Image (spheres, rainbow, N blue to C red):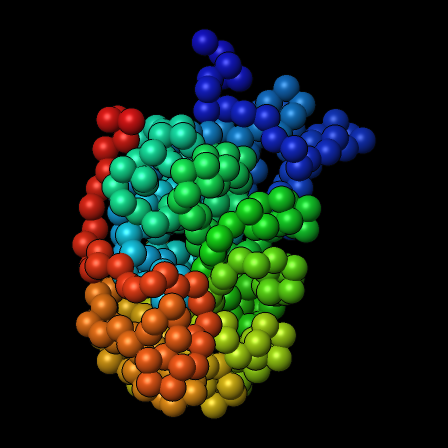
Length: 362
C-alpha cells in the first residue's frame, strides 16, 4: 500500500499552488510553503502529489473521559463527563508546552488508537458523555477529522468542544469554529513580543478568532492564560488583557488563570506563586470580568462561581469536583440572576474521575 492510499491520509481544502510549484497551506497564518513530500510546521499536513493532505485522519494519541471542568470549561454543563482525545503535532511552538510529548511528536507510534468519527460518537453516547472534546493538541491542524466528528456527534445528540489556541485563518475558522458547541481558547499573553518569541506565532489572529466567536457565532467559549513568571504576569499586561476582554467580548466571558510549572524548553522558570495568581485574578475582576478562575492550584475562591447579582456562591468546586450547586436552569437560587453559560436542569455527577476508553471495542 502506498502512502497516499493509507486511510489516515485524506485530501484537504485550504491550500493553493504557488508559481514556483510549491503548495501553500492556508489553515493558519503560518502559511507553510511546501515542496513535494515536505510537511508543514504542524507536521501532520504534507504536500503529497502537489496537494496538501492531512496525515492523521482517524488516528489518536488516546481517548479518556474527563470532567468538563478539566478543559477548563466551568460554565458548560458543569459536572458532566466529556470524551477527550487529540492527535499529534501543533501549529504553535510554545516553549512552555505542557503536552509537548503529543504536540511535538514526530512519531506515529504516538497515534496508537484509531477511531472513526461514528465510533467516537457512539463511544461518547454509550459512556454517558455529554460532549466530545478535541484537546491535548490543537484541533485546527486536524480540522477535517474534527468536523466529521462534530457531524457524527450531532446525529447522536452529543455536543462538541475544542481546546484551541485560536491560531487559524478566516475561511477555515468559519468552517470549523461555527460548528462547535463550546471552546476554550488559550489567550497565551497580550503582547506580540511574547507570541513571537515564546510561541512562534502572532497575537492578532488569536484576537480575530475571539472576536469571531463572540460576534458571529453562538459558541460558548472561555479563555485560559498560563501565567508565567516575568513573561506575561505584569500588572500592566494583565490590565490591558482583561480590559480588552471586557470591552470587546463582554464581562461574561470566563477567564481562567493557570499556574505554570517548568516544562519542555522553559525548565529554568520557577512555578507561578499563588500570590501572583490571586493578584492577576483580582486585576481581572477589578476591570469587570465577572467570572475569573484559578487553575493548577487549590484555591477555594478561585474554584468557585459567584453570582454577579448577589455574590452568593452558586457553584462550589474542589478541583474538578462539585461540592455545591445553587442554580436552577442556570439561574441563581438566591436572587434569580441568570449566570452566563450553558446549563442543564441540574449538574452532572462525574466528579474528578479520569477513565480511559478502549476504542477497539467500537
